[in-house]
Length: 342
Image 1 (tube, rainbow, N blue to C red):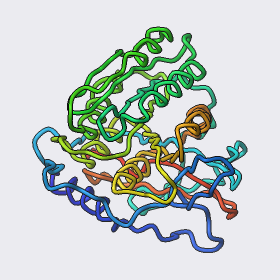
Image 2: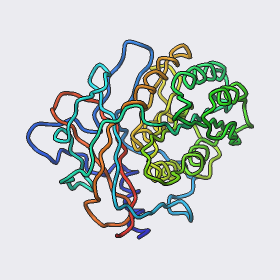
Image 3: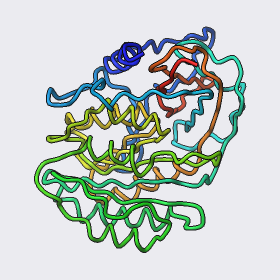
Image 4: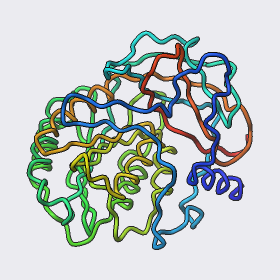
């Protein structure tokens, strides 16, 4: 069972999963569609990268406690679809969507719906390490504005976490908006170093771990970081496995010049691609509010489809989603799930 799981993770990590069009005929938009620029200084990025950077100091995904397997009697896939202008497509039907589970087309959906304003289970994670301290004040202001606007105390909860050389939960999950704003105001650098992967792993496997029950909620993490990591014991694959286990979408926001992509961008891109979120690049601190507004749009409008696994094969199952008709669309959906033999 572990061998199958690792094989799936290894193929995903090296980019060998087949993403060719299995449907034939008209070329549909797929979850790997390229994105477009915008007229603002915010660049939503969605093009998949050719490889997964990993540091040699990271534990492998098969280290004890880091390989997730669970019984999956039903797969629930959430996704967003937008047109070339970034406007959310709101009129898709089940006939417009095709899902491939381990390259096999899903023949029948149990449920298909477009859900707006689902209750949010949100985590805001802020990189306060030395490499980003020059923009920390602006990030805190924009993050506070975002939470003040997006939070609905009647239905939503959020938590605040920061990381540098240490990880600190500044506010556990709460519906109290003022407590969250106070936590953001208090953020400061928690020691030298950068434990990016450890912070995200902790959030996915702790504060956002599903509590059970049939209530449909939207779990998401918004992380403000340059994607650098120096001291984590977990790897990117560990984080993705934990996020997929909890059906958590990860949205990443970084500030940099359009001309200066770095290794951290590759990390952030792989993370958001795999979990169905999105990477936003702000060219300056002044563009942060525009980026948060786009993240809010994505969080509040989602499609959900559920189906039974096409195979009882244990371990990692790749997921691929296509949408017809064939005009250029921007699709974001997680790229897999973990299952045990049934």
